[in-house]
Image 1 (cartoon, rainbow, N blue to C red):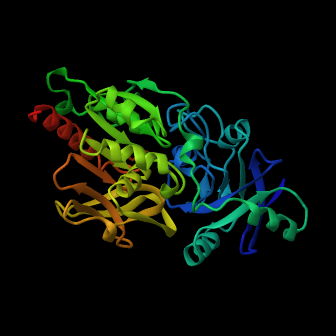
Image 2 (tube, rainbow, N blue to C red; image 1 turned 90 degrees about the vertical axis):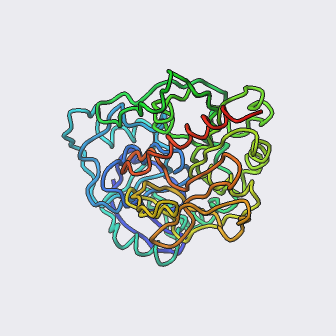
Image 3 (cartoon, rainbow, N blue to C red; image 1 turned 60 degrees about the vertical axis):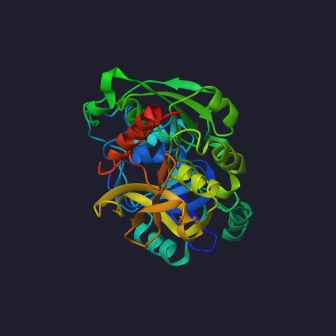
Length: 381
């Protein structure tokens, strides 16, 4: 079935639909530079409201399996690829990518010049767009694009978060996962951690569990007073979609937790923590999305290759240098990738340290979180 991708600047790409082909979707069009891991990308809640373009040209050749899900379903608004493969070859696969997208009502478009599309986004910035199989006039379709919500000012954490608290104890369950870290299991100690779900990925939870954390996942707007009443050893602020400045309830809750419990934030959680400390955030031109972003750790001078997915960033110049230390910087554009408090047990990074998909350079951050909880437990009351 013929399909079109139409951007808000009027650019039209023609192709063929796959997945839930006889449908239509709008969203912010972004690109991801990962060569593998399309299933993890599609199920990452941080992509809610976005049409994801893969820069790698051949997608679908290893199908879809039950182990690589980052949430219960695809979270993207739509999917754009150069060449889609319905036939797949992988011993882990249970169905084709197209069958799976059809099952969940997600439309994709193939045959698109993704190189050209990516260059447009890099030059112009992320644009709203529409994937449609309708044959109505482009001007009519463009009206639907312009009527769709812009990402700035949009709170999507409340859309993807859990509706009620739940416990999580599952560790990495496949032979392809990183092994648990033995140092985190000193005296078989279990660390009681509350995870704020702004769009948390399953492999984040598995990695925390593998480091000896006993997790309770709570909704994005869960009151800080109720978290403190649970008396956890630490609080984790998860990744998630949308504009961090719009998640006002999250910022307010984090302010009440600062100085009370060790805090570790990633991605949207990193941005919310920055806002809670008095900083500001801004929208990046086209964001960071991929599994190969170089980040410099300013504390060790080591270079980490990281997995990233975000469209906003913390302005480091708005953080108080007397209380907050910048710890990581992006080597592509110099934007902030991490900070820590100089006296309180809290830190955060902009990227995804569990790296699903992606490299494992940043796995040490989970051990650091455990160390903060250890120190807090030993500190005098």
